[in-house]
Amino acid sequence: MAASGTGRHPLRRSSRTRDSDTVRPRLDWAERTGHGRLGYVKSATDTAGHQPTNPTWRIPDPISTCEVQCAGQASIVVRQHGNADAPLRLILSHGNGLAIDLYYPFWSLLADEFELIVYDLRNHGWNHPSAREHHNLPTMINDHDLVLEAVDRRYGEKTCVGVFHSLSTVIALLSFTQRYSGLLLVDPPLCKPGASDEDFDAATERAAAMTRSRHERYSAEEDFADMLEYLPSFARVLPGVRQLMARTTLRPTADNTGYELRCPAELEAQVIEYIRSFAPLLDLDTLYCPTKVIGADPTLPYTYLPSFDLSQIAAVQYDFVVDATHLVQMEKPEECVLMLRDFLDRIGLLNLDSEPGAGTPRC
Image 1 (cartoon, helix red, strand yellow):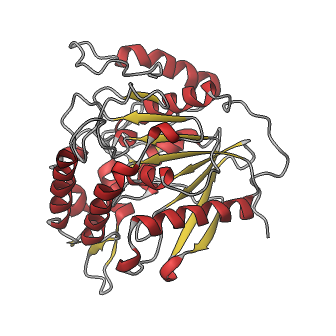
Image 2 (spheres, helix red, strand yellow):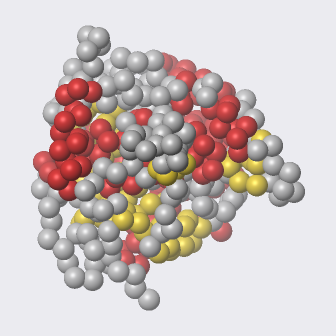
């Protein structure tokens, strides 16, 4: 069932985009509620209040953190942001080779209204490196379930919705928990219904090969950000996102002579190969909770794995963002937030009553 939103029709639109259809509702909502403020730091010349050409995205310190011990002596650093007293908790994670702090242009727009629990997958983001043999989907699924248990212990139970992108959507769908009251899945790597396995296999093989060919060391963060300008996957991101990518996915080398990927290219490629094996197991007709899928524009060339029109799958609400690709939350975050809020409203979770003490860290 296709939800109302930015992209109802799978065919290419005329030269008039739907941006004009969405600007007014977006501004009305921002003016009414105070939400919708992008978290960049304006340049000194930005006196008119326009988005600067090269903003610096500054991620605030979390309200609190919680370190979760996982298999193979790994640990996951969970962070609490947003409104801890909000009645609805959003759990957010990221795509392969990325970091959840990279998604700040998206989740910063949710911080006033919801409690936000963000975490990086193992060998990503804030987490210390762990053994390669444990860097696989079954272990990441177990990590996810341990994170949910730890969050409930630390912050108390409350209504919970998962908001996941790419790799983390697969993890959430294959999880053994049924903790969520709703799921928002952004551009999940699904096999097209009725398509041959060979097509999906070929796409994942190309993605894995390209990942393995990537440089892993850079003399400066700026060199990495400059390189991203030439990648199709970063052609449409908001200003400052390439620099944010450098800050959130690189770390200083052990000898302090430069920077290296926090998630090594070989580990990223290894997970792509796992996706090839596990994606055919995902059955959207067996979901236990309301689920919405936001896809990349299926009429555009894909920049990671193929995006498909899922409007014929009755078990999910499906929509796509016009003229957006795999990194849709860093390209058009406000549109994604509108779709999320619409989904929450449809399933009765947008305006819940608060429970005293929920979200407050426990000793």
